[in-house]
Image (cartoon, rainbow, N blue to C red):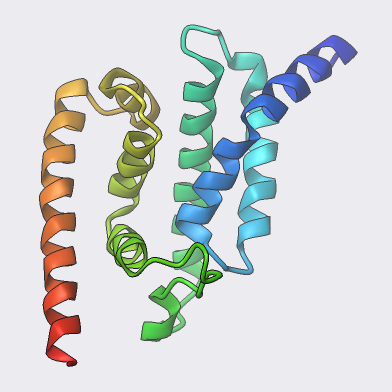
Length: 171
């Protein structure tokens, strides 16, 4: 690759590096595999950059590569790992008191329980991406994204109501 190619790639990557961190945090928050999947994302982005045709925004393309990488990584990981996961595995580590919010923790737990594709859709939706951009990233149709978002919102609402009922039952 030419120095111009590398400079172009590094400049675009640095401008949008937060996308890779967000995807890693959504799928591997507090995990020792987070660095591995982050490195794999960087490798896949570099490898795929020559095929980036600028038909979409770089950020949209980057979301797609990062999400596909993490989903593939998780599939490979689940094939090789047959370890039983305890309930503690699904809990988000405590944040500093200034940031801590019970409602936010409940929302993150609910999002963690979604399927891989639905997590990707929620991440893109929370980033205020358009349905067209979400469709480009996920490979779904715009109407499928719309239908899934309605279902995801209902599912999250049910999970949050159930967790509130459970927390009230403790008192």
